[in-house]
Amino acid sequence: MEFQQEEAAKDRDLVEAVNREAGELIRLLRCSQAPDQVLATATEHIQAAMKSLAPYLRQGEGWSTISIASDTPGLGWLEDDLTRCMPYSPVSGTCNPVAPPIRMWRDGDEVRGEVVFSPTYAGPPNSVHGGIIAAVFDELLSMANVISGNAGFTGTLSIRYQRHTPLDRPIELWAVNERTSGRKLFCRGEMRVDGQVTASAEGLFIRPATQMDS
Ligand SMILES: CCCCCCCCCC(=O)SCCNC(=O)CCNC(=O)[C@H](O)C(C)(C)COP(=O)(O)OP(=O)(O)OC[C@H]1O[C@@H](n2cnc3c(N)ncnc32)[C@H](O)[C@@H]1OP(=O)(O)O
Image (cartoon, rainbow, N blue to C red; front, side, top):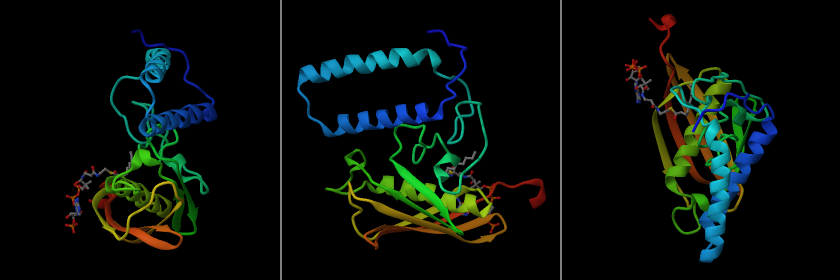
């Protein structure tokens, strides 16, 4: 299939809307037990959508949480919407349909946020999968670094799963960069439900070396 050279969408609301709908499609597929005929019809509709998108598939290197292939707009962010920082992240990106609906914002030197996990992200009965919890902490603690002015790669991430983190209920998110030592960034975070901590995390992130470090 030939790659279309037409300009990519300028309307960000439209991009976010189609990704939200696709996330909802994933939830419906995960959570429904439809009869064969309904599944067959749904497959046809999905195939039609795939056919219209396929010509615009990007190729090449450079994929990241902030870029489509080599298109890299940089780490821009809004104080009241930190998800803007990594729009294609599989954890918080509003332009990535596999991401759960996370909101994160700056509160002084701390990051706060909220997420409701659908059963798409289920692990133990009625609870969020532990790997998903770890992924959200990775993102949350990364955001604490970003607002402190020091982005880094995850070196070590330690999670304490204190209680089951429930599905379909608002989970409060909190994180802070506690200290920085050279290139090492030390962060802490928590998930809470009704004020009670369900999981906590400690992370050591490493800022990439620059000429200033040598
Ligand atoms: C484009 C931006 C996009 C941002 C996306 C953010 C997404 C969210 C965060 C992530 O998911 S990042 C992905 C998961 N992490 C990785 O893939 C990192 C893989 N590891 C590496 O790339 C390197 O190992 C790393 C950059 C972390 C460190 O390599 P360096 O060569 O810069 O470090 P070096 O070996 O010089 O060590 C510097 C110090 O850090 C320590 N260190 C290095 N790696 C460590 C580690 N993994 N854990 C703990 N400490 C570590 C090391 O002991 C040393 O301590 P000392 O100065 O006290 O001697």
